[in-house]
Amino acid sequence: MDSIKSFKGKSEQTPPVFSALKIDGKRSYELARNGEKIIPKKREIEIFKFNLLNFKNLEIDCEIECSKGTYIRSIASDMGKKLDSGAYLKYLERYSVGEYSIKNCLQIDEIKDLLSL
Image 1 (cartoon, rainbow, N blue to C red):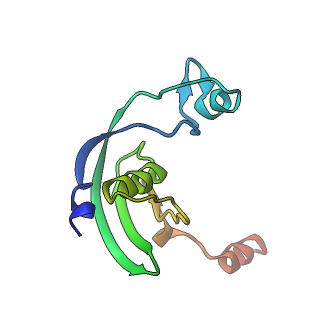
Image 2: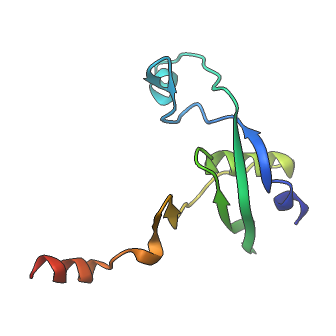
């Protein structure tokens, strides 16, 4: 899918208005909820991997590896615009953040066992 390929690499992204990004010391979402008109500054992001996993019933499942500061909700919205359609993020599962990976996580039962020692 050419639309997905076009997202790979470095690009600029405008963070969502309803984000935790700070603008003049206040969270963007707080300003937006108070009705203030704000336009967050674009920032450079990088998409290292963008794989289509499934396309069924007009829903796309994909896997994305990206740089810090990338807003996946914005990627979904931008994808819809690129396809001359609407799009939104229905579900997000984070597999890693920095050095932390789901591969190294403990299961609930393992934590219970450790706590009962």
